[in-house]
Length: 190
Length: 231
Picture 1: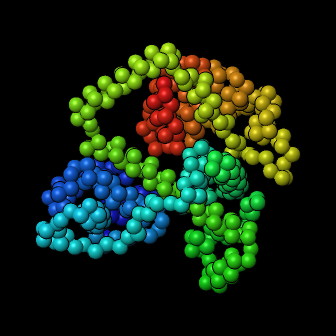
Picture 2 (picture 1 turned 180 degrees about the vertical axis):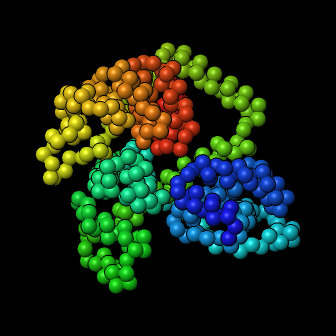
Picture 3 (picture 1 turned 90 degrees about the vertical axis):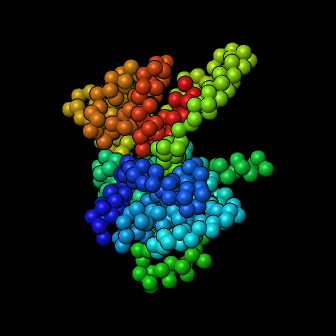
């Protein structure tokens, strides 16, 4: 594994979102040119696909599904981008008859992005938006970033991990209360 | 049904694959018979998914903004500018004044920051520190303490909070303005500083502080953007 690849994974795992922007900017133009030539994607479509490829990479690192890479980050991102582009043009019934497409055959393992959610999950997402800080940050850092309690305490300036733990429980209780209230209001609206 | 801490911890361990095979089997068996455990498990699972969806939307919008193709063509800008002008003109003609006041915005977004330094718990009597006094709403007493304590970013931040809760917005501006950029409380302090300016009707300074917040990656970014749009 190259130093570059290892660094990207470590930096993203540490939670630096600026890294995600840098990664995107670094290969955006190249991906647009490549996917435009290979799949006839418009500039906007290519940007949309590449954004999802970068977020897929980010999610896989965060969830611990991706800890090492055998290729460079660029190869990994372009391989995900290729799969997403193919999915898109198949969905739109657009034809690709360019054999060159198949030339990019880097096999990469990753978990696909699944952003569809149930009605209840969407309600919770709405409540999370209203929850505000520090609750949102605590829950995000624990469930999404998968940081330890100790790390969250340091990042948010808490006295120690025990204080974060009890605050997290209070946040969950509050979220649950908001959810129940919202669910009742929704029932009343029906 | 209140959430049980132990159920939550077990559900998290199961979801994160931190249980032994034996623990997993026993947990799965218990899920079908223990309603409280099932509720905690479903809630944790759904919250995790909801956070994933929220984060996806946030990151997508961040990258879109960062994208070189997100720049509109000049003609599109002209079109949008013309539409905005038209809507604003009609809005002004119909309503005469802005519908959302800074007071409304303040009320919509202000929420006191919790005591994360020294929370009241079962073993404390609730009056052990200025932070606990603040948490319990004994604001004057908390302020007396903060006023004699050595100044640190933590005391400054909470002093600002106490002043805000007491309605002393000018004093909260002074406290939040003194927070150093390297402080853990700097970003939160900037948020409350902007809200205090808003409350004082100083939209210009509120916007000046909200702009960098809206472009940052903190949890305040979305809310800062929304306030700027409303100003």
